[in-house]
Length: 291
Image (cartoon, rainbow, N blue to C red; front, side, top):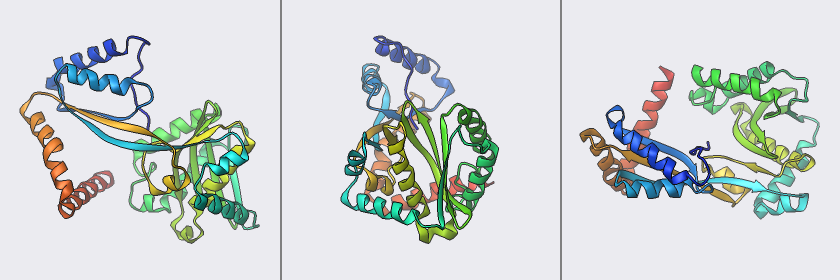
């Protein structure tokens, strides 16, 4: 969800030019380079785009997206971070969670629950969610499932992963999968059992996790990539994540460059055609993952 170059200080431009010259020298091995999710806070994005211009490469800069986050120091500052509607909703959720049928558990390295048990419960909940039914979750594909199982098992023991559950009447119905680093919580993934959608379990669990941060050494929460509407309801603070596409000089790559820079922007103005195009791409992606 965050990608960038790892470079020696004061040699950033020299390094990025070397990388670009190397990949162009080996252009027969690729059609286009897709650099996603680069934050605008390190300065490397601006250097990259300057180098692309200097080398006169076919490239598309843009597709900038918002990455929402919340920073807070105390209870009052925490609540004032949100919109008036969100503040009211969080207080309602926290009051509702005090009822006996609800229970929230936040599992860290200090809890007695094993990572294997947590992962099995997460997978069960995801399978009952819309993500599981659409085969679009992190446990739907065997490769991503294996990846997250390995990462969670290693990072959980080091205190870098936190997994929270919302339990209703004795059954876990939602989870939050977060990373914890340098006093900041990174909201990576969540899912809830569709049968309990009427309870708004995902929102209620997030409200509880957010409030718990006030009693722990946490100075903020980062919602990572994605501009889902629920994120903007919680906060208006965001960083920019950018995408840069670089194309080589071959005929097929030139065609892709024209498609991305001219044809697709035109189709976006023809909403029905563009929605059909996006729908077909998404259907093909789901079909590929399923079969």
